[in-house]
Length: 282
Image (cartoon, rainbow, N blue to C red; front, side):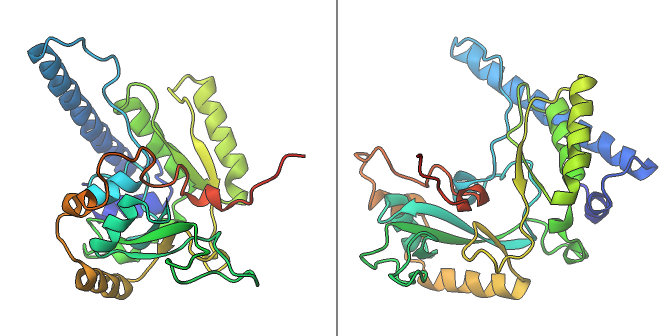
């Protein structure tokens, strides 16, 4: 909404320069405007249907499956890259996953499905496979803007993310913003200090989740997010279109989900955090 200069400002750490303060005023206006719109529309609806007004109308859901499959906003988080593969975990033969196959998306076995030698399985229909990863190529709406590829989004600092989270927290939501801040080891102390300051000064901070950032994508194969180039994205999207059997995802889903299965959809946790090994209680 604010152009390439806004992204460069993010990359610089969102400093409080004259330009930076102007950007923050734009963010405040944008967020406050949408907050007012949400309240007005919800209250009009409640008045029309004689319903009690909810005391919390605005919220921000994390980036996840529903936004990807519906084309909705993935929340406030900076994207992993201008273009990336999003891998979502489903149980094998889940109706939503089967619909994704008909829609053209690729499906592979999950990270936990391995052969007797510990090698990852490749055939999603192998009898040893228990979970699937649906691979969705994603490009942010502004990916093709001139200069966008010059900005390395993966380098946005934890403090930059925290700063924008507080903007959303102050000027849009009425409770708490669903937020996961990704950080590197050297950023822990500075981020901890900033969180302490927001609590001490009563700035409206409630809580955020923290996630270690992996810079070496080859260390963990089949990660939930994998940055790709423009050429890779275009190739993957062409393959999706070639495999696609229907252009209506709801139609594809209705072939497999008859409303009788309660436990359908993506796994409860399909983020980077789920890559951690499980511990058995003693």
